Image 1 (spheres, helix red, strand yellow):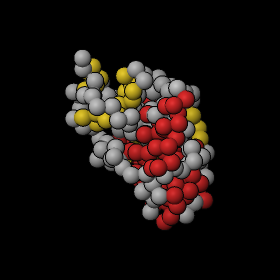
Image 2 (tube, helix red, strand yellow; image 1 turned 60 degrees about the vertical axis):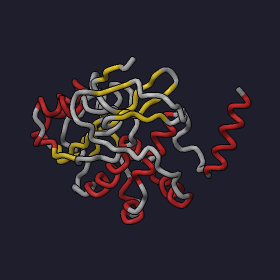
Image 3 (cartoon, helix red, strand yellow; image 1 turned 180 degrees about the vertical axis):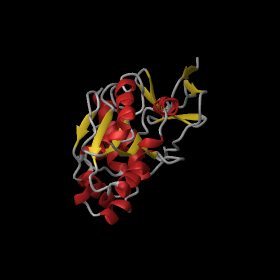
Image 4 (cartoon, rainbow, N blue to C red; image 1 turned 90 degrees about the vertical axis):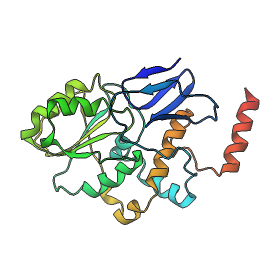
Length: 236
């Protein structure tokens, strides 16, 4: 029986995770079955390449260097616990734009997910926060004039599925459940960062999450993964 969901993203049917986007759903365990979930409200804004190849070892090693950064963690295209999915990053020099735009590729957006906070109205914000549980909404240029938007997110995030990253002035009052995080992503070479196949890496993160694997587990070739999977099945 098909379940009607109110947002896109990752949904669990027992032990099987399904990525629901557009008009179809995909699982990551090779299950030959029709997706048990359907979303009828709104358009989906992500088109994750579910069949993306395993990243090259060089790409993976570069990715693992930036992976621990709190901003990267916040932008990962995986669901986050309700009430723990909103983050505030100070951007005193207004120079995080290219990094954020690059990281946004992790969730393979169709329309941009980075928007000025001062353009957001209450109804629009509610709609945005209910669209997906794995693609973050990034609001930039947050200043004291945007305090009502910040406060509203603080209230909605306990119920809304979508992660939110707020970027702006140090003068903004940030109360729980919104978490202040500090990023050192500026230390990484932007050109090296931009050349990473982030759409594929994002798909890899989703695949590992869906299989209950460690997101930062060592890189594996296809043959190594196949051998490990066989060993794990034999053990059970």
